[in-house]
Length: 84
Ligand code: SF4
Ligand code: SF4
Image (tube, rainbow, N blue to C red):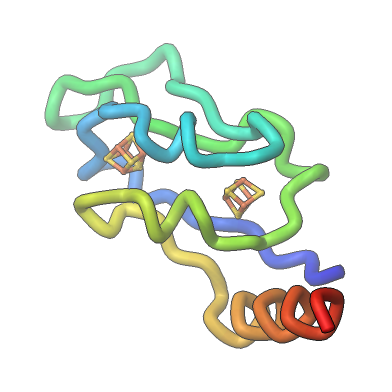
């Protein structure tokens, strides 16, 4: 399994929690501190369990989250193989 983890551009997050709901492992939460926009930004809470699936990045309407594309495609390929 890939060990890529998402990176959050926290200063531009609006705290909508869509990524929180999207993560199958419940690994994302809103932080206590405010960002420069006045929102509680999202971030990983249990990053050691992240499998780099990229669902959080796909869900974010403002493209705040990036996951290494090579490893994301590796995950997709892995899922395709497991469904054959
Ligand atoms: S990459 Fe997948 S497992 Fe990791 S935080 Fe995002 S949704 Fe959760
Ligand atoms: S979906 Fe994007 S804007 Fe919304 S809380 Fe997550 S990172 Fe922030």
